[in-house]
Length: 114
Length: 110
Image 1: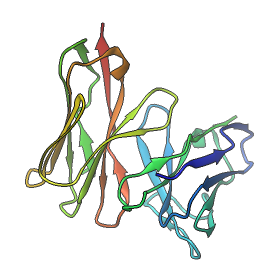
Image 2: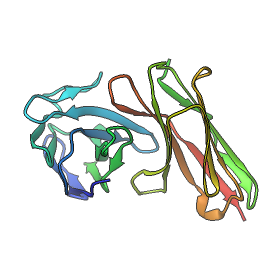
Image 3: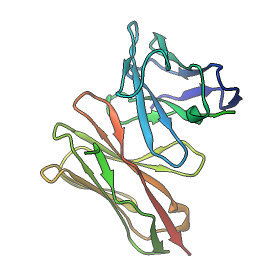
């Protein structure tokens, strides 16, 4: 699997502000995904980051709240906009490996909104 | 109906025992199935992948898949305290997305 680097690793933000999370992969990958893990919960898929086109969002997630960029095959960003305390979660970037099957994760971004 | 379900736990087993973790999924088109281990405060770590019916063994871990019953399980033999973690079942859907179950917390008691 590719090595996935995310930054920041953690942040504390004021409500109403926005945070952009960066995900860098050390090799070109076809599929990149963004997940959210709320406290004590499992992983929920936010969206598929598509290279060269708009992201594909899962039910319950919208582009205005979670804009995503994928300018090339090694990089993606997720922005959490107009944050509220309910957005406090771990956000994880993943890629699906050579076989486009299993998901491999970066170390995640732990976001606290106060 | 949730796409991926797991036994709710928490599951406690004594050291050296077999831990059995179960998972069912709803998408009959799913072809790839995974078990992840997640320690508190860490990212999920892939421990097993299984793609065809039957058993797959890797060290102390055995994954079992039954597509007809839409059922996946993970057995951990000779459980160790270091196995204490949350185990996440994950399934690739017909649209090549990986969907996770709610997780089962395992505690191995020395």
